[in-house]
Length: 88
Image (cartoon, rainbow, N blue to C red; front, side, top):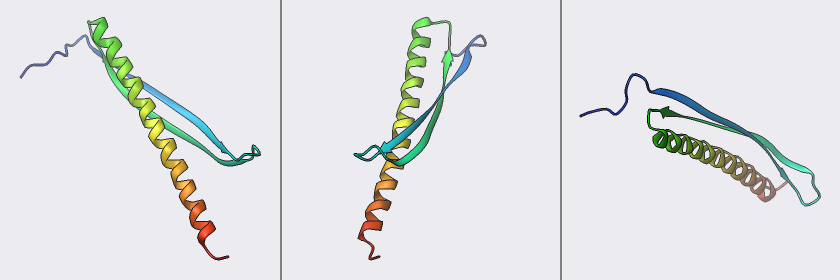
């Protein structure tokens, strides 16, 4: 077993926060939320490896944001459907 990591390598973080709004057809707010994600990547002596690692970290964070937003919207829509089906 060997490691390509050497003592001069550094680890950097990449994070993002997204604020989103779900509007109805009239433009009224139905849902507002925040989503966040973070990842890290290794900066090495290889510029190619570092650029790819940074891009991969960015992609992972964007995927996290996407999943978080989709989950929040899905939960909101499930709740609305349940409320509409419930007898008042």
